Image (cartoon, rainbow, N blue to C red; front, side):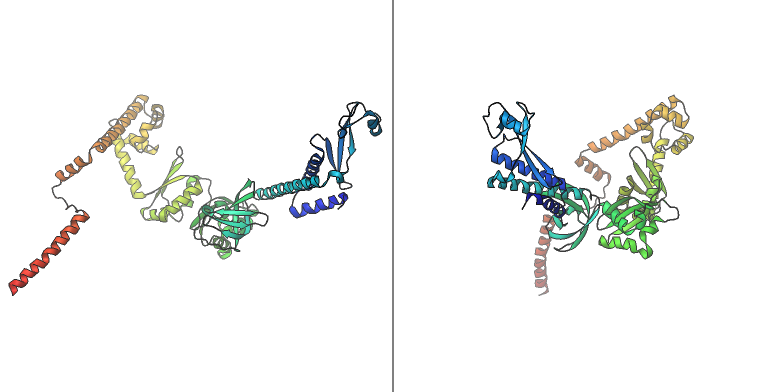
Length: 472
């Protein structure tokens, strides 16, 4: 093959391997440099240039002009130097074009190894870059093999892996099955790019809706967030930039065809589509649907909400195994505590009673504090005197006295609790038994019970024999 054919070869390899043309040229330059040093040693000073017009890689060797030549391979005398450049002087470096066919077989073999190595690196980098750009997208692949902890997927240019934690529980795949998954990350490793896929990631659910709902790609409908317990249930929050477009209706589709396509891909996972609201409390109420919410108490400091629901709706709000409130918490980003209305009213009454037990507390002042969010002595003990005085409309002195009384009440409760905890278990049991003379029979150990039963069974035959004798 002529060197002038090199351009055509480089272009073909670039197309077949997906490697940039300039990267291949650099690899060939490095190969020729390695071949030259293999042939002439490391002292050789060469420069390699690619001629785009001829498609040829030109190798130039530079020799130093000296008065007396001691190393002919790297030096020329003044006479020879003037033939190359009439204006040259001692110490100049003059370049001459080399004949690459003189490099020899060993040098050519070295160049071949360098080219192969550079091509592998370039191909690996090209594959890595192509998948890095697709990170965050859904990709189709074919299952190559499965193990206990992962699924290996063939993506064509590279292999991908779906770890056990990223697989939907209950899903089973065989070799040759087609699979869709979300590209979580791409790792650059020595053996090649490692693509990590997921079918449990919330973004997988979001991207599935993007493929099914044109309004999302058009920017009319926006998916604000998503939360999932893969294989069981998922929630997405949607909003619309057009008041005439219902975001929930757009995601559900005609007769539910759009959402059903997503459900089928997720193997029956139930999807709740929730309207997003800028008010966090209203958004949480939407997220807990279909449960009706009576009241929401927001704690900005701890980023939590206490959600009060009717007694009959508590199980619906919490969900089976706490799933509904757990997903709502993930979706909203708030820590949620669901309470029944009865339990909430009882806690409010207990807190109010604790306030009324303070010597300096009055009913009017308690009502004011309740309206300002002070529901128990714990709330009073945490504020400063200035803040309490301003909120309750009392003097700093009265505010300080109230706070001190609240702290003393809390300390008394803590001391009482500590004293109860310090009582030895045996003494505690003795006190209970002494206070209540009617004591339930204590169950005997299993061994004693069996022994008693055996004794009774042993005695019964004797009684029977005596009875028989008496009858006789």
